[in-house]
Length: 409
View 1 (cartoon, rainbow, N blue to C red):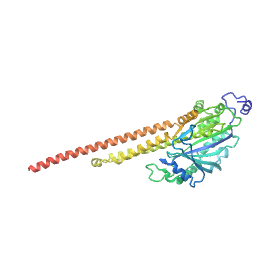
View 2 (view 1 turned 135 degrees about the vertical axis):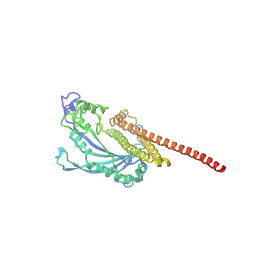
View 3 (view 1 turned 90 degrees about the vertical axis):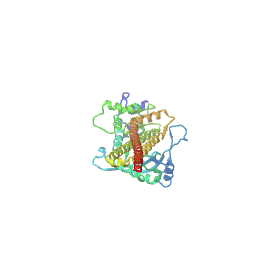
View 4 (view 1 turned 90 degrees about the horizontal axis):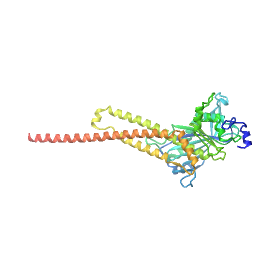
């Protein structure tokens, strides 16, 4: 760090210590809203639908034909520019705290993935000189803002209406894709530069960064162990850049202005987490239905003597298991990060911090439960068929004996 930048960031600060409040010189806040909109999206038809009259612009992302660089998508996602939107944001403690409503202008866009997930982006430009503490507070307010949730749902409905039958509903939806029920959020603070251009080690030492990653602020300081845990998921390539990943928010500092690729990496990790969490909930509901139906069937011994009530259930369980297996494979194989070892590390670090592997294990375990239920029901069906066949053979033998005796009489 040269003398000028050292003076601007606080001369006399020891290495690794924060030199004062961090002020954003150039940057923006991106609020992500992630939605599962269906089982699959035909991106070619979706692109045609969007370019055929949807407000804004639509474009396909980089595909396999792109020279080795950062991403290789098996099916390039569809990017849709939605334009400027206004969010009626309640004023927080720093803005009066009296419930007043202040309009906030955001730039909205969307990315549609072929495996049925949608990432809505709401970008807020940050005025030069904005303290990182205020950015963290704004991110926390937006994460809980009902107005932004409503806007995300409205934009999703409007986009689904335009995409039409390019979106395949889930097998048990019973109709066209409807209103999104599960919307998950994540905040990205994308900074090109802080005032004074402090090195990454000073940014990392900031208490404001710790609170941004923690997702909340308290009057008392964080414990040293918690600060160490929050800083465990930090990546840096040069002395003056930084990627710090939290559970609900992340900071990307890139003076070279290349934070776009890092933002995409983090977005992809968020999409994978949302997909796995969504299907984890679907599997919970499915297992509950299966257990209830098996229990109801077992309470009808007369029906069990005449026919098996499990045939339809077995077919449905098998279809669900195949569908979920296909979904998991599509999500995992949808993208590769190539040609950039550092970005690949950031991607793996984001997957670890967001516990995507844990959700995948939960989904896999419940897949296994459904598969075992299917095998058990199939075995019971086969046993019942064998029993009925053996009973029929015995009855035929008895009938032949009775008819033979009757002829002798």
